[in-house]
Every structure is written in C-alpha cells, then in structure tokens.
Amino acid sequence: MAKRWRIRIMLFLAVLGPGFITANVDNDSGGILTYSQAGAQYGYTLLWTIIPITIALIVVQEMCARMGVVTGKGLSDLIREEFGLRLTVVLMVLLVVVNYTNVVTEFIGIAGSMHLFHVTKFISVPFCAGLVWYMVVRGSYKSTEKIFIIASLVYISYIFAGVLSQPSWHDALWATVKLPQKSVWSDKAYMYMAIGVVGTTIAPWMQFYLQSSIVEKGIRVKDYAASRLDVIVGSLFTDIVAWFIIVACAATLFAHGMGAIQMASDAAEAMRPLAGDYAFLLFAFGLFNASVFAASILPISTAYTVCEGLGVESGVDKRFKEAPFFYWLYTLLIVGGAATVLVLPDAQLINVAILSQVLNGVLLPVVIILMLLLINRQDLMGEHKNSRLWNVIAWGTSIIVIGMTLVMLWGMIPGH
Image (cartoon, rainbow, N blue to C red; front, side):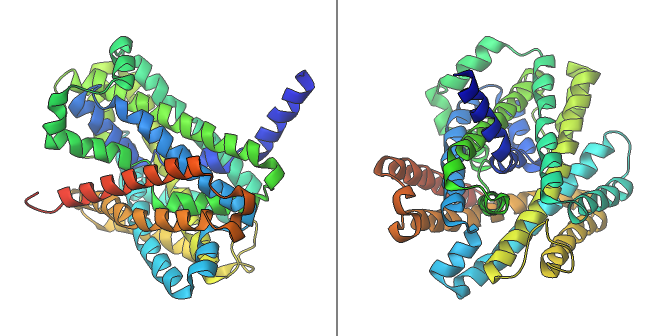
C-alpha cells in the first residue's frame, strides 16, 4: 500500500506544472485588484462566489488538459485543423490584441507594487522586462517550469496577509457557504462586482497555454489521472489564495470604511496602517510576484498559440534560430507591454487595465464554445470525449460564464 502511494505521488510530481501554473497565473494584478475591491467594498458578502469560481475553473481547465493529452495537439492547432485557417487567423489576431493589453496590465502591477517601495517605474519595469525575457529565452522548459512553480508557491504570502489582518473567521467561513441576504440581489453595483469576481477566473489565454504546456511536456493518456489532479490542485490553491485576498481586504479596508481602490497596489498601501508592516509587505510582495509571474506567462502563451495556429515552430526548448517567430513575438509583447507603461501617464493606466478585462470578456465565449465543439467530437476524442453528465456541467458552466460576461459588458455601456 505504501509503495503504491509512493508511486502515485512520484507520478503526480512528474506531471505537476501546467495545471498548477496556469490556474495560479489567473491571480494576476487584474485578479488581485478585483478580489481586493470585492473585500474592500462588500466585506465578506462576496465570499460565496469562490465556490462557483472553483467549479468553473476546474471544469474548463480539465477539458483543455484532456484534449492536450488525447490529441497531442495544442488548442489553436486543433482549431486550425477542425475549423479552417481563416477562423484561426482571425482568432489569433484577436488573441494577440487581448493578450497585449493583459501584458500591459501586468507591467502596471509591477510598477505599482515597486512604487510602494519608492522604486520608480522607469527602473522597475525595464529591469523586470529584461529579467522575464532572459529567463525564458535562455532557459529550458524544465528550468522555466520550476521557476514558475516556485513563483506559484509565493502566493502563500496572501494567506499570511489574510491571517495577519485578524478577520472574523466564523463570519468569513459562514459567508463562503451561505448566499447573502435577498436585498443585495437588487443592488446593481453588488451584482456587477459579483460578476467581476467570477468572470476574472477564466481568461481566454489560459486554455491555450495549458493545452500547449501539456503537449510540450509530453504527458500521455496513461498519465492523465495525475495531470487531472494537477489541474484540480492548482484550481483549489489559486482560489484559496483569492479567498484570503478578499478576507484580508474585508477585515481591514472594509472594516474601516476604506472601500475605494483604483489599483491593486492601493490595497497594500491602505492596509499598512490597519494591519501592520508585515501584512503590507506580504500583500505588496505578493502583487509584485503575481505581476512578474503573469508578465512571463502571458507572452509565452500568446507565442505558443499563434505559432501553433499558423503551423510554425514554437517552444522554450527550441533555440532562437530554430523558432525565430516564436521568440520574436514573445520579445515584442514584452517590449511593447513595458514601453506602454513607461510612455502612458499614470492616470491613464487604469483605463488600459479595464480595457484588458473587457477584451477578455469579448473573446472568452468564442473560445469556450470552440472547446466544447472539439471535445465532443467522437473522431477526435474517442472514449475520452465528454460524458453526458460532464457535458451538462461543462455547458452549464460555459453558459453561466458567457452570460456573466455579457452582463458585465452590457453594464460597461454608458447609461446602463
């Protein structure tokens, strides 16, 4: 029995990475801002969203991982083969635009977090841009993945920050499993925030990156049980972190009537006099780590996706000469994202961050529908296509995510 469990643990550690990393990158500077706003403005009353968030994340990520293992192809590769080059090119162009705004948002997070330590963005942004570029271009897949896993574990700092904020654990836990009072459902601002919290969980780029990582790692069907566990553990861990971010801001900012947050770094700065220097340092360091982490992953994800869609060489295990388009696109996204933050006035950066969330919302429904059409193909997935029960869960999750995205976009139209 002990030997069998030892083998299972070793197998899990062997495939650990794609699911764990992808889920945790979701807690980027935009996600941290959303969770911080939820706690600061509404206290514990939005903690109930964490349960549907976790279910939605597990369902969608599991489908991507399964498609990667069974087909041995990335998502954009499958879309090109099954739906044609024209749709693929349009989708790739949209994804590059959307991910560019996301990369800018991550560098905004880097600039904001380092500003808390009195480091100007003209130092922090170029330095971090060079760091993430060098790490990927000069590293191998295995070394890069190890760095990303370590970066994922640094999110524990938010758990410590939540503990140091001294919340009411009874109230927080009860709010997690209980729907709020009926009166909040007629509160337009509350509903908009609830949609934002759930909607920030699943971004279009995540599906492409996860499936590409599964393929590049060479995970086989017989190892899929361990890979599925990787997805589940990653989703649970990232949403536990999200829960603690909401709790930390609820116990400090909301409790003291400080609900206005424009940037994620505002939460750390406002928390300092309320929860002490340690909580401030942990929250600020967590934001910096999250921003650098996502600034590394997002350009890689985009480069993988576009190269697969166009059928050109890609992969961090390839040399620059072997995959020039992959590395040039990766480089341009990093340079462009960093340069935008340096050129734009600070007052306009929040508009770019909001734009990135809107564009994610526009593209997400398209990606989810294409995924579901692919994974239910008998000739493509064989016995590994979605079961009837899993289809109910998957389509239900997809419809809810699409519906929330549309409501969010409708709410952004002036006059609504």
